[in-house]
Amino acid sequence: MNDGELRKYCEDAYKLEHQIKDQLNSRISFPVTYLVLMVGFLGYLVNDFNWRATSQLSVMFIVVASLDLSLVVISISYIFVFLLNHSYDHMPTLLESVKYREQLREFHRQNGDDNHQTADAEFEKYMIHTLAECQNHNAFINSQKSRLLIRTMRGLLGLLVFLALTTIPFYCAKGYK
Image (cartoon, rainbow, N blue to C red; front, side):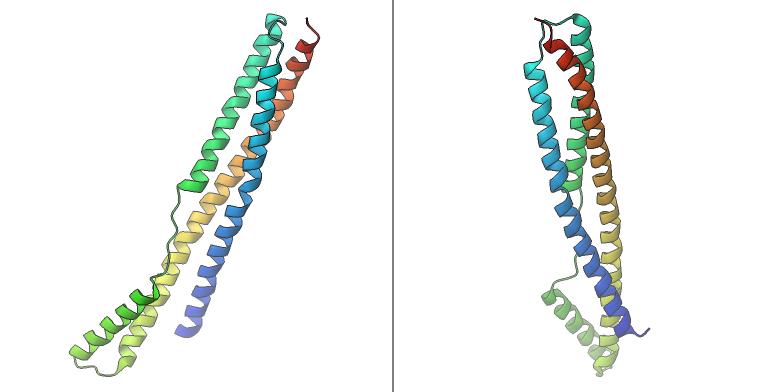
């Protein structure tokens, strides 16, 4: 594989990681919407609970609702970390790249090499190395964000289960007057 093919491969891998980033960022909308719905349902249950029911039902409701609330807090924290705790690496701007190439050419010219091929070969290696570093870092960030998304979905699944359990004392207490 020559330098041109390697650079093309690195560019494709770099672009792929940015596509994965965009896909991950678009997938977070479902957990956020789901979380809002579940918090609204939990609020309804707490607001409409018959607190005059037996103390056993009230205690059971409070315990399960507390577990629900802890899962809500955990899910929200995962969502915030997903959204705010990552920075992606980017390639140098076009102006920075052109400036660096000119600096390389000037350096080689000052050292007696008027042929631009040596400087251009070094610049090509620099670009390949920079692409590879950025792609590697971005792949690591994407895998972290993917894990956070999975943890968020697991927390929301647990929230669904515990919300279903919360409805048991809620509807049992509805019968008490």
